[in-house]
Image (cartoon, rainbow, N blue to C red; front, side, top):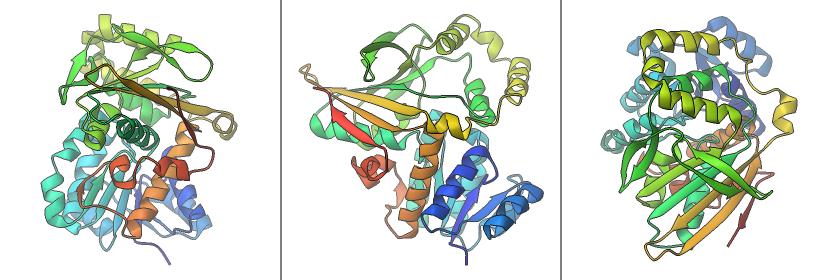
Length: 351
């Protein structure tokens, strides 16, 4: 018998990892997406039910999501998939989860808070690697330094991106890097700022990036200034320089179409061996108006592997009634130590 959980985009790279993790937790999700042949090929060996639905026709989508308690959207880019699915959830009274790391998507979902409360549903985006571990770490350092006004993250460890994730990056190519200042999201010049973080092997130069925590961590902690950096790999430096000096070209429809077509040629995602051999490291630093500073470091399994585990765990929590109505973030609802309930995760305070 199926659980009242639908995984939309189940046949994609991340969707398959979420489905596998959900089954390991004892769940029996209903698989959903556009392609019936792919859904049947995935669902039948697993003994799972599936439903076919595109996103263009509201009536068809409602039929696929009817009588479902939780919808977990694993289909990116979420700038395209989130609006119709969340609207369906609000109509049907289903809780909405997704794997987005897109700042505009998270901010758009914040604006559905009143509608979600009226419908008695929870909207919780970003229940994958972006942003569960970093959101929990944000809550941890905020608890260590009450009154913090600045929150800075450093990340390293990504192996490679799926074509879907790469397309999301392409959509933001040519624009400024997003940061939060005084509670408001704004942009800074790509490649203009760098600093060092100790990911465990000494200081590593890192550069400003747009990352989901710029949106979500504010709602978890209330800290008004937020920045995210990533280790300054050659690929990142090249991408930031291209955005800085050729941004107007990258933003044109022709360039966007060409870049997205190129992304289709990428490998589906990291191999099982690559994921097993990789580890993510996140450093979070909070600072108050007096200049007092605390920092902590978190280690997790590889990002896509951990996305499957965290998303499935959040879905299970919601199915059990462990939720809060309205727009929510993982760290706010489940607490700073939620991330420590997963295997191969460790946290240490650096100061």
